[in-house]
Image 1: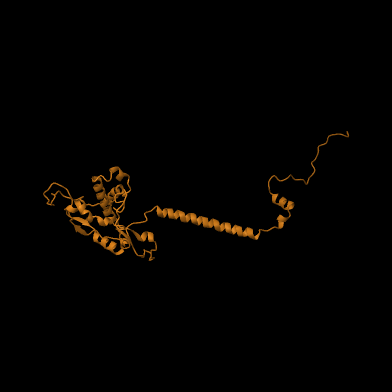
Image 2 (image 1 turned 90 degrees about the horizontal axis):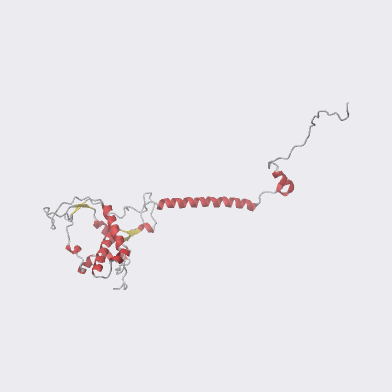
Length: 262
């Protein structure tokens, strides 16, 4: 047999194992390289900061939730029928007729509309009240406001004044259109008409109200109404005008006078 005769080799057992390809022992290696890590525990300030950060995150989430709920609340109407301000049920049957004084634009009848230009006319300040949960309202924003009927009267008076000034050439239609009052009042009165939705059946009459006429003028028909005097009583009792009764001589039509004392 030759000295260099090839023989099949048999593998010998070995204790070698390849290095791990994962980070399984990375933590152990760090401990060997930095012995202090093996015994170091979280510091007191680290624990405090951890809890403080948690508290701040919770507070932030609560603030976000609060703002979201506020947005939902303000997206809904925040006002509506208030039981403290009511003209009662629609159970009054009225026939108002016509009044030539209120049809006139003559300055001698300005006194009939002067109250509508009184500062704070129709504005009221109500005392606190109990809501449905039995809690007293402490919100001054919703305890002070105006009554719609008086706002409508103010708009009618303003439009009457605008027609007078146009007739006297002291204001132009363009000024009224670009002003901030009469144009608003015109649209406001449209809203009032739509809201009231008066369903009175008006029959043809003459201008004196007799039913054999051919004009549907509506002033002599019996209407089902609410009691406007109740709103007058509320304003007399809680009106803000009691504190400052001052006539407003400017911005009646949205175009301030150069001399407000005139």
